[in-house]
Image (tube, one colour):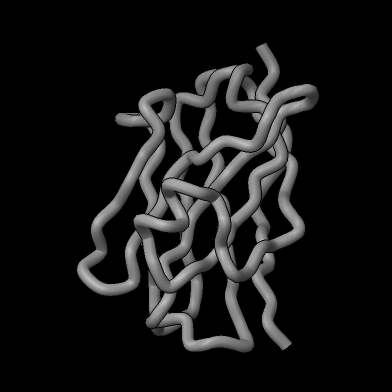
Amino acid sequence: EVQLVESGGGLVQAGGSLRLSCAASGFTFDDYAIGWFRQAPGKEREGVSCISSSDGSTYYADSVKGRFTISRDNAKNTVYLQMNSLKPEDTAVYYCAGDPSVRFLWATMGGDYWGQGTQVTVSS
């Protein structure tokens, strides 16, 4: 069974930090790009960051550049999103997704696999 399980969300004050984890199972993790996406109430889902399967290339939304860092540990089948200097506008449900193509994943948010999401709430 394919699973992507997010964890690490919670409530944090503005300026604080959280680290999200996306644990994968049921597919060949090394062959998949993994991305983080978020959806705030009343807004469309948007891309936050992606990391490729091969060369570790990364993509970031302009709104999070310099504050968020994506990384992956293939030995643990896990992708992380370190979020620093959090702002109230970062409040959303954060999802991870996987696809063999990082460009496809980033451009379309149409990954093969999706997690159930983890809530991040940043208070002002």
